Structures are given as structure tokens and as C-alpha cells.
Length: 386
Picture 1 (cartoon, rainbow, N blue to C red):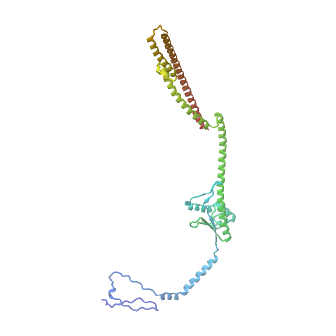
Picture 2: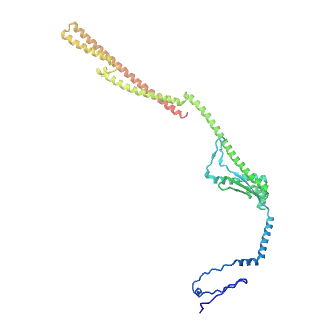
Picture 3: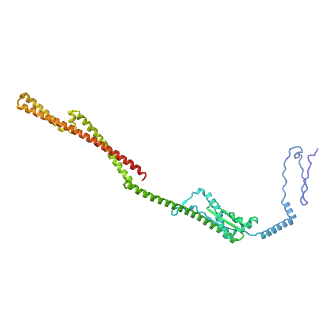
């Protein structure tokens, strides 16, 4: 049975350090219970100082060796110089036709536009003149290794390993950087690439404008030829129609057709009216003759005849048939009856003549309307050609 005052000793530390024996209470020693995590004792600072004093020569040797290796390697490395040219990209693109105002592109495609310009700077058309000017193809071929021949490098698109094109965030600037062992060459190549890019951009715009101008000139020549042919055809057309302007001629015919239609309608109404009077007079009705346009004289004669008959009635009551007054009254009545019949015949003849004239006028106006309408339709159809 263990005693309640049973003690345990800690492991021995180095010679310079010692630890007092500490009693462990029996309640904290539980061999059959769950494991309890105990905190490790903290290492004092003196322990680290003791390690440094013991291994200082090893640490010093490692530092000296590292510095010497860095100096040797740095002395063997050849310095690389980088030169950067800044290009400001203007979104205001000039129009293709000279004389028109420039148009500004939409701002929502700025990333695509600048990415296009970056690819354009790295293209063969921009880099090849610079490579040929500074003879960079030899350098690029040597860096690529012996397996890459000069002929293959000349035929392939130009790619400069030392070239880097970047764009600062939220700007329209492009940074063209080139690295080379020669600082002067690095500066000249970066500036030359920037100038080559600008010249290439100007050439593209100039060729686009030139091609568009040539296209417009061809279109103008074709339009001029068409205009000349149209002018000749128009002169021939006007000579054929014997008019100055078919549109003016059409307006005149339209007004004339409207007037003839109005007159034709009035002639039809007048013919119907006179036909009705002619038929009434032809039937022998006295009232129809009196209400006709020539019935005023007939009405007067009728009134005179009535008055003479009343007078003759009074004379007949006083005188006999052999009396001069009786014979005189009888002769007057007969004369008025003869004049009345003659007037009636004249009125009937005049009514018939007026009816015939109205009929002829209606027919003539109908024929004129038909002819004018045919002429108007024909000219209107030819006006499409005009």
C-alpha cells in the first residue's frame, strides 16, 4: 500500500540547474483513472543563452560561408537592365471620313479595347521593324538554344522574351518594358516599340480611310453615270409627252377631270328636268305647257282668251248671229285660239329642242369625261417612269 506522503523526483537538468524535490499528494495520483493533461514547464531564457555560448562558432561559420557564397554568385551574375516607355491610349477614335467629327466609343468596353491594344503591341507587325532595326533576332535565337535555327526564327512570328506590356489599374496607360544586358539597348528598344505601335496604328487608320475614300469615289462615279443616264431619259420622256413636268400635267388633268365631272353631273340633272317637261308637253297638257320655261306667253294668251270668251258670252246674249258685234266677237275668239294653239306648238317645239340640246350636251360631257379620265390614267401610269 502506498503511503500518502509518497514522493516522485523530476528528471535531472544540466549541471548548472537543480530542482527541489516536491511532494505529490496521494489524491492527485490516480493510476487507473482517466488521463489528465499536464502543462509542460517553461524553458528559461538562460537555457537559450547557454545554447548560444556553446555553439557560437558553428553559427558564425555558417553566416560567413553564406555571405561569401552570395558575394561569389553575385559577382558572376551579369546585370539586366529594364527600360519602360509609357503610351497614353486615347479613346477618341478619328472618323474614317475626313471632315466629319470624331466619335467617342462606349466606355463599357475599355478592358476589351485596352486588351486589344496590348495584343497589337505584341504583334509581329509592330515588333518586326524594331527587331530588324536593332538586330534582336540574333540575340533571341542565341537565348532560345542551338536547336532553333536562324531561318526558322525569321519565318516565325516575332516574340521578344524581354518584352512585357502592362496596364496600371483604372488607367488608359500602357507600360512597354524591355529587359536587356545593355541599358542603352533596353531604352532604345522600348521607345522604338512605342513608336512602331503608333506608326502601325496610324497606318491602319490611314489605309482604312483611303479604302473608304476609294469606295466612296467609285460610288460617286456610279451615281454620276446613273444621273447622266436618268437625265437623258427624263429629257426624252418629257419630249415624248410634250410637257415640262408630268407632275404638273397630272395636276392640270386632275383639276380638269373634276370640273368636267361637276359639269357632267349638272348636265344630267338639266337633261332629266327638260326631258320631263318635254314628255309633259308632248302629252298635250295645257298646264305642263304653262309651267314650262316658255309658258309665260302662253299664259297671257290663255288669259286673253278667257276674257274674250266672257265678253262674247255677254254679246251673244244681246245680239244674234247675224249681228256685226256677234261676228266680231266670234272672229276674235278664233284668232286667240289660233294664236294659243300656235304658241302651244311653238312651246312644244322649243321644249323639244331644249331637251335635244340637253341630251347632246350630256353626251358630249360624258365623252369628254371619259377621254380626260383615260388621259389622266395613262399619264399617271407614265409618271412612275418619270
